[in-house]
Image (cartoon, protein in one colour):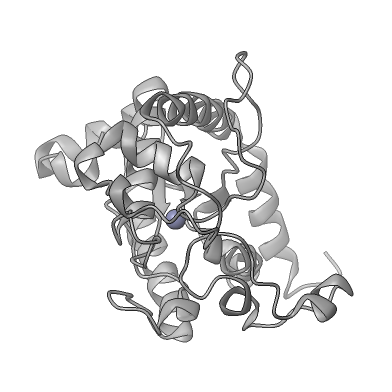
Length: 265
Ligand SMILES: [Zn+2]
C-alpha cells in the first residue's frame, strides 16, 4: 500500500492491515554514469518496497530523496542537502510516520552513500524516549534459490546490477548507446596507498569514481534486473514478517529509557 495512494478514510485501516509497519525507502538524486537516470536509486528503492509490500503487507512511504550525496555536487543534477538538515528531516519524518500510527519504521536504503548515515541514525534513536522503533533492513542478505546471474566483479554504481534493475522496470530510461567501452567504470585508485592501509577519508569516492560510474553496465539485461528485484523483495518481505512479530525491540527501548534517569532502579 503506497501512503500517497490511500485516502484519508482508508489510512487507519491500512495501518492495521500493515500491523504498524511502514517501509521508508531512502534514495538520492545523483548522476549514474552516462546511461542511467539521476533518479536510479529512487526507482529501485520504490520498486523493492512495492514488491516486498505485495508479499507482506506494509505501508510504503513516498520516496525520501533528501539524503547524503555531497560527493556528487560537482556533477549536474545532484541534490546535496546539508548534513544537519538530513538528520533533522529524517528524524522529523519518522516522528510523523509514528504519529500516524505506524510504530515500526523500516528504512530500506537504495543509495550506498547513505550507509554510514543510517548507521549513525539508528544509534541516535537512543537520544530521547520515543514510542516507535526504527529498523534497518539489509535486503542484500540472503539469495534466491537460483544462482546469481552477475558476470562482473567490480560493481556498485550504474554498473551491471543497477543497469539491469532499471532495464527491468524503466527500460525507456536506459541509454545503452551511451555505455562507455573504455573502462571508465574501473576505480582510478588515486588514493590507493592510503586506502590499502585502511585509511578512510571523505574524498575517496571522488578519487576513484569522479564520473559516478563504478562497474560495467554492458552485460546488464532486464532478466538480471528481474532476478535482482525478485530475490531482494523476498528477503525484505521476510524481514517485514519478523519485524511484525517483534515485540522485544520496543520493550527493551522502553526499559532502557526508564533507566537512564534513575540508575538505582
Ligand atoms: Zn545508485
